[in-house]
Length: 165
Image 1 (spheres, rainbow, N blue to C red):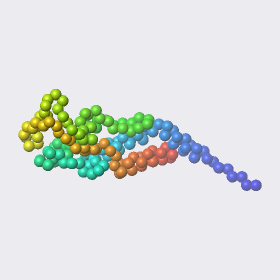
Image 2: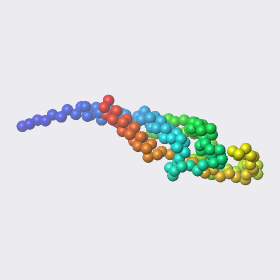
Image 3: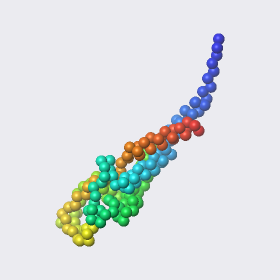
Image 4: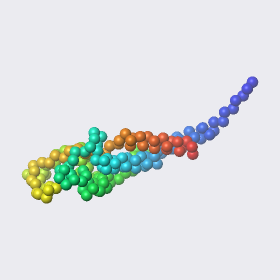
């Protein structure tokens, strides 16, 4: 008779490590929130949404420059819109409290609240009075395929790190 003894304590330890890591994935989600931020920041830099390039603004058509970034600094609007990133035990997130983030993400019509017209200075320096202004959607809160691949890789790395611990 032949007896085979399998020592599976290393495998069991690795499985226990992975289960412990998955019980509190906050460290992985923190890294993922950073990857999400980088991906969203990249959308500003490239001036693109999931359907392609953003529509050029009046200012850009008249003066050049970049959409949603006055004076060319990418950190400008995105730095004020993205007011935080983080994670907890169940998710990674980006957050904003800026009221104007929604109009840039989804587009929409801006109408005066208390007057009959909106008054604003155009990029040509003239003052304009309009009953409404339509802002085209320029979505930036989305994850690209490349960003999603980086997130999946991060999760795989997190699990493998726990496995090899």
